[in-house]
Image (cartoon, rainbow, N blue to C red; front, side):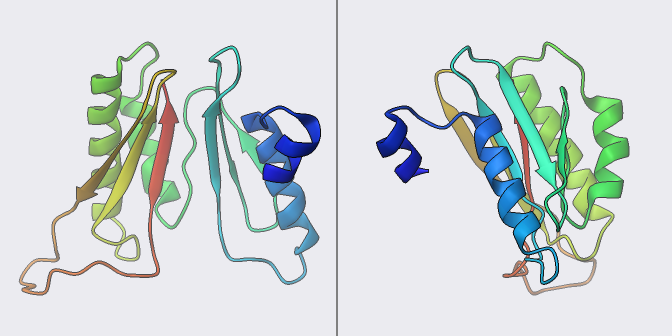
Length: 154
């Protein structure tokens, strides 16, 4: 991305970054990277762009939200029921937090929390959420190799 900025003398738009990541993942389709990235951002006109990928780079865009990771199936139902257009950043954060915690509580591989990023034209708000540990557990640790980020734009 820095080479693009130096060569073109402009910043990469979120859609361009999504296409670049899609190409990179597709190049490795026979020996894929086991990751499901999410790209979110605002373009020059402050129009939101959000997309997710599968292992071989299939780009999936949406106007409202995308989900990714081990908890995708659980998150789709919860997010579809709670998300509505026109929320302010506080409502959006609360909705995302409840959806994320509800989704990871239903999937033992998703860890015990997550990170919520709310992107506005003025700022990026990042907050870490801690989920509840398993019943009867006295060890409070998260799974070091799983990190679930749910990203949405206002």
